[in-house]
Image (tube, one colour):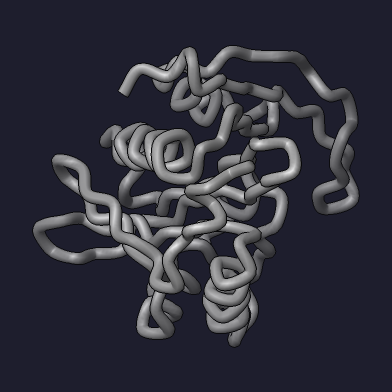
Length: 189
């Protein structure tokens, strides 16, 4: 039913944009992930990143996403600057092949905020999801109190599909989420 997903290479591809190289994560990325994702501002605006970021968590994450790629559960990329190779964050798709959809998630290190890096990376990941993996829909959620993430999704042409009230628990506080989505037929690379 999803021939491209069934033909996923054992080796995760690299995606190139004007300024970025999105590549598979490597164990060598662990110190940068711990440093960048360990910033309080990152943990505050993401559901699954803790603060403080524990030693060994980056290695565990990197190994898990490699295994998830092998099992066709997700495609997670290191977001790096093409000219220097410097890690900026991570971005990926959690795959739901039964429904031909995926959920996009990302974080960008604080030193790289405000440069359009996330929008550029997300556009490449959407293209990969629609063209290479044959997804029909890609969605994303963000905390309502994080409007910058919403602006990224809007720039991609994603539409707000609704508000989920007190949908997740983060640090003993219930968070409202906005849900955005885009169909393959709506995507304009």
